[in-house]
Image 1 (cartoon, rainbow, N blue to C red):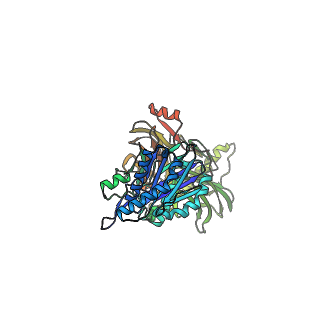
Image 2: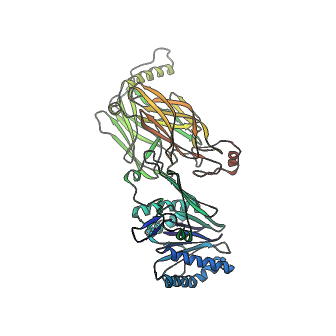
Image 3: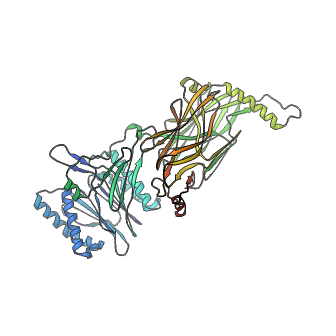
Length: 581
């Protein structure tokens, strides 16, 4: 498969790497064929064929003519000769081999005047057609054509640059190929960007960021004109071979990736909680977030009571639009449900929301607030509403009176139980943050210096972090364990262990502390928190070098500091304006 997409500022060419040998027995699959080939620094040709030797022969003849006639190294002059010469080459090959099979080409490059142009030609007549606008798809991956036709205009208008369009296009093509499960298309995708200032290959890859799913991480990149596929999980490299080299070496069974339908677990959206709090106000900025008026118990002198509960929650997970359900459960009554939709653009980044939920209470008691995203129960919070029966004593300061009432309400809340926790032994995360410091004072909670990406020249990196976490647990003693997990390989090391004693399943148990996390190498990392050997929460961060590979590229001056040996930390909310939706 080769897909060539024309945009207003350039073009994107994408090809798979699969070759299928027919040795007389069952087909042999080899995911190591380079299908996008350089002709000059400003011209590239891509091919799809049922007969790779035919494509190799025609490309070899084109290169030979370009060496013999330097004028053909200009895009338009080369394109002007192809209809005659390529058809001739195809007929010569056919007469020699007695084989007449499908072969098609896409020629892309930059003219002498800096214009990006795409040309398409295919057997049997190999008539050259200029792709003025739109796209061309050749080969057995034509099933992606309707998707490209539907998405091309919005890709061109909505995304800021050619790289962004290529990234989204590649993800979309992979999803379409999985949907149709095309066995003849496979391996990682070769991608080039054709821009007025030149042609450059685009590194491409993926890491499965679901901590409950088996490790899966692959990448492909070109260095000095050579493409290499890497299976980061299996620690394997598969270089791509030009057709002539592949044919010389002969058949070899090499499977890198099949575009098969995903299994139900990986296809299902998954989400991970950062925090779930009831509070009166949230203020966020680059690297910090502050929750004011945090409460889990309230008192009122009068019932029935109607109260609009502000709910703040942060999470990361599967991109897309997802249904959110906030449900309030109270004894003897049907749950009150508030539904909305949240949009997640990028999986590795945390998304934050502020929602309201109305509560009507006939009498004092405990209620439970649950957060569902799609069908996943992500969080459950216990709230206690008590009766205020006290009156201030003479000359008693208002603050002292308030502390006296709050103290009694907390004692009453502590005496309550969460039946779901006590009966199942399940633990619920309240918040989890990797930061530089945490301020936790009565009704105020603040995380400062929240870590998203770290940049370091030479690994391993001893990273100093503050782990702020809190849970709701059944009464008694519990074991806490914190692991560092490389998302690509799933290599795991234990950061720390501790013991937590919970006095009530309706009271939050915070666990805060300074840690040294030894990061062994660049990559995506999970920080998994376990309670009684059951994973209760996962935070995510990225480790980079002074040549960023996985995440954002800082300013040149900042990268120079990393090269000189400094540690650079990109904090949460740095890439965009801070906002809580």
